[in-house]
Length: 565
Image (spheres, helix red, strand yellow):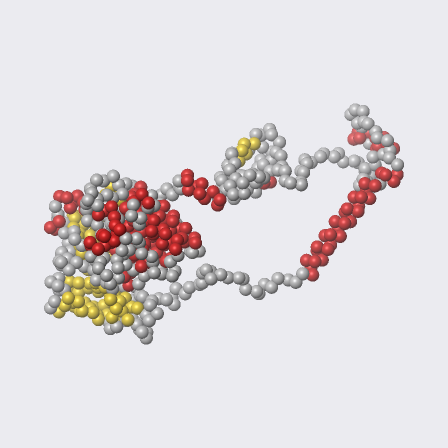
């Protein structure tokens, strides 16, 4: 909360019941209301009465329109309605995110690499959605990333957003997350400026501070601007952050905008590659059109096999084509022929069309010749007599067959008759064939015997594991109950807050911070006892967020406590 002024009295809004103040900024206050129908808690942002000039009102209305256009995105705060109160103040009714924003969380303790990557990708997708609608956010920072009840980030505060081709970038920004070009004599803001702020926000989540802030050093506005413009990005002092992640952040925050990622979605894809390197689950990029550019398709060619569609006429016999066509169901577009050559990495095939009259040929594999079926007319035999397995091809045998079955064996034309071979030579092929068959039977028997004698596999042996294999987690074991029975009271110029630890353990302490809207309030502080006193400095009310911290560093969700006259 700003220490320069007290929040204005909340307006009376039909259908809404005031609950408490959530925070204050330079142009507006934010309150918690309960909506009657549908019944839910909502955050209401109300423009200050002394800011109700023509320009501020138009900017406030523009914010309402921008958020209404974009808030269907899962990583953008949803806006429910907008209007003007009875006392003439403009207001926005928005989704209420009860959990601390990411600025407050990062101050308490650095966020894990896995969560920082996930949040970075989800917020980058929200920013990409705004960019594709022609909107620049221009104030991306952890304090403007709220957290929903389902632990999803939600980007908010489009109050200084402008169109991508806008020519007035002079509106106020937050220095620690602003790119070098915003401090030039003629400030410039582009899509790549938002990319810088995205990288700075992810860095902040990992380091617990803004990128060019020096712990214990001078961190005034002039000092930060000088470092942002001239000094290199300090490496993350975290052993769990890989070098590839630092390279991604370093490129996102390059001094020259041309050296940065060309878009928010390109930054998100770079973070996805880090997730793959760390064997994390890959976070999807939530945008309406995520078709990669052509150059990215070529880069990923080694991992992509593109096949054309095989068009099979329904009258073709067989209707579904050869076996390899019917079994290629993995291609959702149609059927694909097998690979018979070409590159091992990528096989590009043109669409195939099989005309109805064309005979379907089977594919030819090395060492295999597939021949079509031959029609052999059955020979009549007396009942109970099996036909000869080997036809008699001698001249006497064929003559006997012709005399016995003239209808089935009579040739339609002259039939050349070979001279009968002598006895020994006519049996040579038969004996060779029998010898080959016997050898094949011996080989099959040896293989079958070896498989029967082989020891059975040890089904009880544990499967190999790696250090990166995820371990099952107990969702209840790490839960810490937040503070309860919070009370706030004002005594003179001091606000006194008390609370209870509902599930105390040895070594418990408490972490608290004063509530602010823009993230410029005091840092999180630790106390051993469940009570805090703060100076009001002329204000009439104050709020704090307080959490329980275990001896092992586990922290509960925050509980908000307010005190007012």
